[in-house]
Every structure is written in structure tokens, then in C-alpha cells.
Length: 277
Image (cartoon, rainbow, N blue to C red; front, side, top):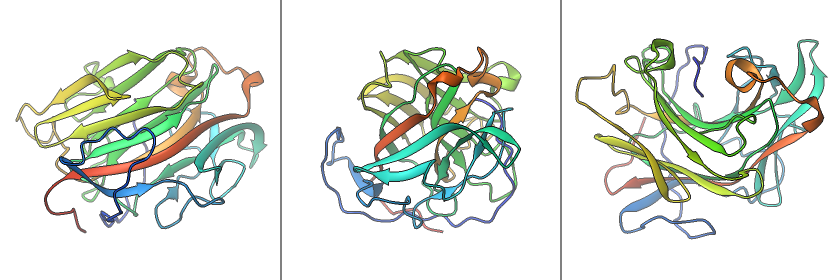
């Protein structure tokens, strides 16, 4: 997401878990070039797989209005072969008027130089702010934005046909007014599933929707302030409500509940050694 994450320091182990390679709807990957190293197809109903996913918890950042809950089926569950993240209008812990979920692979898995692909259908309406994004493992307590942030997909409900990609580093970020990013028009991304993806190596990072590339961020060789992306990044998927960007035109309370549905998450890497702790 486009604004600083106020995350506590943590110890993390970087894991890349091997998974069997198989094809399913939406797959557009050259398997001669990429190999599947981690995935969740969400085939088991109930709670998200705790071996793969952690929950963020509380009211965390960006003056957002939702309380992220932990292990609460109303907000995060697997059903009908999909992960459901659901934002609801309800009072919670006497602190928030909305609940939602944010799932992360932090302390479960992280990757360096990969293709990250998520097939998802987005929520809709004024005030929603869903995102599929990555953060660098903060092993040296560098904080944001030094460890890097990759926003594979961001969406704000008051721009209903626009998908955003953004990259944040110490050198380039919105607080300096020089953030790097782009947009693509996707009509009604809440009506259908689309494949949101990033591919990155040591030289560049390319962003796609349904196989169409619309943004590239290149390593100019000036160092980690500009390119911290040779270190592991973990994945986050969430629905925020309101906040400094999502709430710029207010929140329409008549829209709730709202869901982001995720058909699958797949992580590919090129031939070579798998990242290890």
C-alpha cells in the first residue's frame, strides 16, 4: 500500500517451500522458464492454512478505520475453493466500526527474485482499499521504506476501474513526492477474477494484469536506497477501509459486507537454488 507500515521488529525465518507444479485456470506462465516453488490453491474449507499464513491484528496504519481480526471466520475463511477476506460494518472491541482481515506470509515464507501471481476478484464501493503487496524482511530493523515495498495491486473504491502498482524505497516514496508507480484501466474488477502479478530479478521489476505489462521499475545500480529488492520479501493481502487514501472521498456504509476473493496464490522462481533461512 502507498503509505508507511508501522510494523514492530520481529525475528523471521525465510522459507521457500517446494510445491508440485500444475496448471489451473488463469495460469499463463512459461514453465520452461519458471518453476513453481510455493502456492496455495485454497482447496480445504475452513481457516486459512496456518502453515502458510499469519494474521495482522489491530488498527495498524494510515488512519484506516478497520480492526484487523485474527482467526475469525467472519473476516477470513476458505470456502468453495477460494480464500475470502471480508470487510464488515460492525463495532469491534469498542475501538472500531469496521472489521476486516489482513493475511501475510511473514514468518512463514519469503522470496528473492520471483514471479508472484494472485488471481483475485476485488471488493467495490467508496471507502474500500484492498491490496496485494510485499514487504522486505526487516532482519536489520531498518523499518519502512528502507526494506522496500512492492505493491502488486492496489485499488481504491472511488476509482472503480483503475488498478495501481507502486514501489517504495528510501530513495523513491510518496513522502518525498517522487514515488514510482503506474495504473491500468480494468473495467469493474469486482465483477470478475483477474491475475495480478509481478516478476522481478536483480535488474528490473515488471507488473502485469492478465498478462499485460503496464509498469516497470529498473535497478539503476545506485545501491540499496534505490534497490533493496535483492533481499527477501513476504506477501500480504488485505482489505483496508477508509484511511489516508482509501477514505479520501469518505466511506459508503451501505456497501457492506465487501469481499476480496482469492482463487490462488502462486510463487515461481527461475532455475537455480531456492532461498533458504
